[in-house]
Amino acid sequence: MLTEKDLKQIAQRGITEEQIKTQLKEFETGFPFLKLEAAASVGNGIVAPNESERKQYVKAWEDYKAAGKRIVKFVPASGAASRMFKNMFAFVDADYDVPTTDFEKKYFNEIEKFAFYEALDAVCVKNEGKSIKVLMAEGNYKAVAANMLKADGLNYGQLPKGMLLFHKYAEGSRTPMEEHLVEGALYAASNGEAHVHFTVSHDHLAFFKAKVAEKADGFAQKYGIKYDITFSEQKPSTDTVAANPDNTPFREADGSLLFRPGGHGALIENLNEIEADVIFIKNIDNVVPDRLKPETVEWKQVIAGVLVSLQKQAFEYLRVLDNNPSDAQIAQIAKFVEKNLCTNPKGQKVDADYLRKKLNRPMRVCGVVKNVGEPGGGPFLTYNQDGTVSLQILESSQIDTNNAEYMKMFTQGTHFNPVDLVCAVKDYKGQPFNLPDFVDKTTGFISSKSKGGKELKALELPGLWNGAMSDWSTIFVEVPLGTFNPVKTVNDLLRDQHQ
Image 1 (spheres, rainbow, N blue to C red):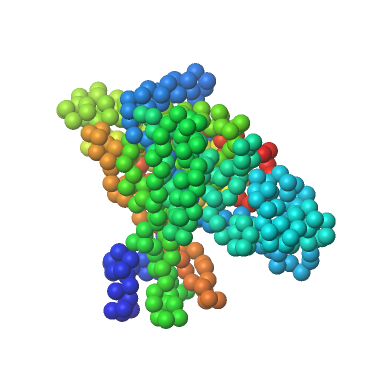
Image 2: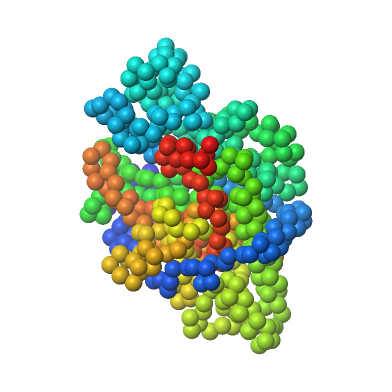
């Protein structure tokens, strides 16, 4: 099935023939659905700290930072913003000329509220010889939308989300990338330095670097810190081969194999190369203006405090396990693993080996918010490969829709995951874990796509905060909805939280 030419193409990407054969086999077999115990809820897998506990966790985090630990803020930022503008692309191509849908009417009625309004007005004057107001008065709404989207205008249809103007300030509008730099200074700086890492696509790397060069020094002065800002790209070795509907390799017109990005799960490789004690992970579009940042900052400190408190206890217990623990000590540690780390042995023999395996692994605390109908993965108690039950973040595609009990759990789940994670990635001896060792490879996704009018099957790797972190210790903490403000469409920027 694979030719010499294929093998050469595969090797150039840093992929092995064995990996390709495995991927083609996965197209045939598919991935098993996960076995669920329950949707996590407050008191059953989700912790809701009271005010006094929150203060203790914030102090624990401040103490940890003061000890000179290396903290990194990791921001997946490689996606293009094109989906944000789906409605406006449709308007430009529509067979009518004036705003007709509710979405279009809102966009044009409130256009002056957008942080990019002045920049858009300037390109309209440059390209059309007329301001936005004049163009709209003449009924030429499409010219306004086209100048926002097209390459000779703002090019927002192709730029990454991190490079769009999101929020207005007296001193000028800010991009999400800049807002993440500010957040890094406010809760992730230690030793007078904030380490911020962005994963970006190769095509956008120059844009990000130019914006950092332009803006970082100003924020460094404002917050009295130094920035260490780094970038990485998704590795070609994490791309996956595409298949035809009959599971044979999909080929381009020239006969070569088609490879596609392996999804955000590929970023476990990037995360694995970060030198840090603690890593915050947060999506590029989930940012707010300065006036709303205090709540976000407080809760980031809370979940980080939960993490370092639990890690400290886990490390103490690992040292006990290294020194012939008594039965009483084994029982005490087993209680910690089950109650505090929400890992149920489900009939497994609970001895020193079992406890060491469950304690000596990466740890993450995930903020979860009350479910208000936003799309996103949900927190569940799920069976693992070894028969134990622990907390996982699941996507709907991982759940058997024919299982009425599971669908009830999913639809009636009280919380979902807004990608608000803080991770501890070193062991109790100070050595970094090799994160790919903790991936559950049976949790990938297969989806239907097309290329050049031909149907194909695409394979996504286990998601970064789903199967890629399956064998981590996971803790869920309820955080306020105010800490979650994603921007999925351009009109989301008109919400009060982004004004």
